Image 1 (cartoon, helix red, strand yellow):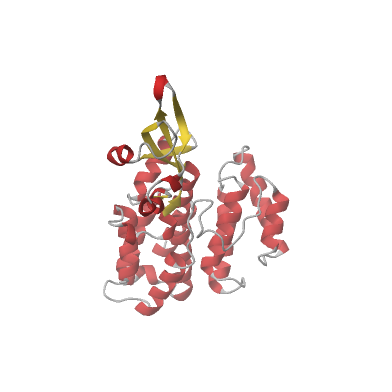
Image 2 (tube, rainbow, N blue to C red):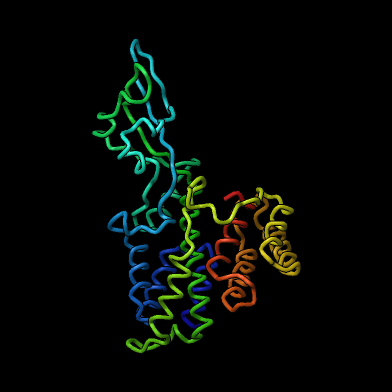
Length: 304
């Protein structure tokens, strides 16, 4: 099997760890000789060094909660923290969570999580410096950012989908690119960089609901509502045959997963086929937008 097809199959199969997929991409990056792709793979595998290096999909919109103590043993627990009460220079950073760790760290968090949210503690020294700003007569004794676990799941899916789109488009340009010899790039670097920018950094959006960067494509798909999914896809010029194939895929996957709480292999195969059509120009939509449209629609249907 060619390296490109190997990466495609690994990206589609949710059972294969995303770090394994990225290490395969590291080999591809060496054979393509493209520095931008190499650097992105290294960042995802080993973590980002600074906030300015972070792509949009690793910046989440969050809210914060805290514990407060007052006079005569009064207090509040798990109370919402109004960020507008903070000094203005700190408000932006506390409205977001910056996911800088290797992607493997977030996979581990997902696997260990027993609830619907994760916590990112505020620095204790900072909490002490702003403790009396929020509720009259009460001091904040602990505070944390609340990160929806679904947002972290979406981060992993976004990286997986970006890899798939990138590899599909590279294959459409040079089917044997994965077998290229070192120092013999199969494509001009300008072309690889264009494909990279379009599929990896182009048209990216914050993966957290409510982000101001997450507004290009309005989501109208309701959880487990097949009619809303069908209407959404029709509005994006997907043919009735393709929609029918998706409905069959959902039905087949539901036999293995009656709760329909995750995307099955049949639906992932359908998504891959559609992204491949976009890459080849048979669907009147770019590969990056195709990834965005399908990922948002399918994730919403499954409540992810």
